[in-house]
Image (cartoon, rainbow over all chains, first blue to last red; front, side):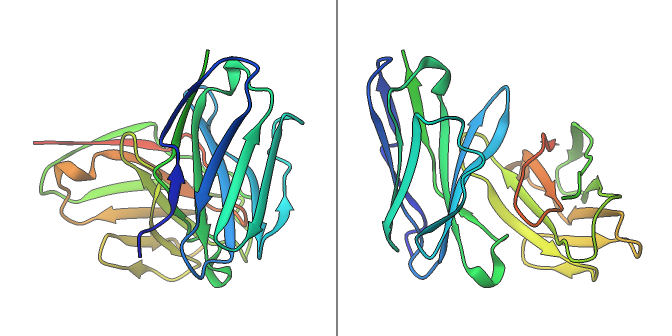
Length: 114
Length: 106
């Protein structure tokens, strides 16, 4: 298995632009998680899905952030409009429901908003 | 959800066992203890987890005290590639703290 795939690996954009981050979970995994990591705040859970349904989005910082999972093999995290404080590494992770805590992380997307 | 406490940093000599402690005194009966590590610039990597029995896999061993208020992750023969930030989590939903930065010295 290729593991969790994220794209792009690096994104540089200007303030106010829309940014879309993409994730392909491990085949067969029914949980998908989006995290954000910064030096100041560490690793934060933003939202997670179970069987394509959002379960807990309490970590989403504000309405500028949205996440979708249209099918079991694809999810997006969108920021519109982006701001410099959104600069971070965004990780996607997936797991099986039988062991939801055993998560497998992707390589991350490093987002820089100027 | 239980809060975990870890030392911010540790050193270990290459080839020796690295013992990383974690306190989780408020853990509830159905909360598992999970350990992850993050090597620089990579995503976190699952290592091991347990509920109340000691666990071992190809990467590490996990020792949980009988009262479940603390645990120790053991890397039996640390190598330079084990240098990373190690996170102990005792939650239903994963919330990462600041972890322990383990440095393996040659």
